[in-house]
Length: 139
Image: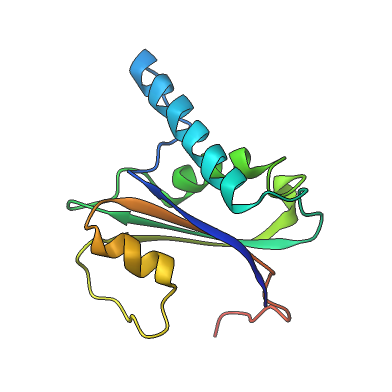
């Protein structure tokens, strides 16, 4: 399974569900930040194959600021046209919230995640990979 790219974006994820002027401004800034990080991580033509997305929100505080589905939607939408042609190419997704300072298994962890964790600031990790094949059904 090949990993095509990965990146980290600092700060909490912002949901598409914004009703205030400030909330919409925050969403616009968040989408621009994701687009910038995606463009730096993937300077090539958009992929045309099926993909798996991994999105992990490393959050501070007692609970995540958004639900997992609301966290992933703006990220996956923004990467359309940059990393892949259509977000329907994302046939598998791993969406996770992980509390900063929580207990983790860290053996073999991606260096980009280790570096971001050392900063002790909230961040979102994004990876685009080949999907699992054959797909393992839950046991």
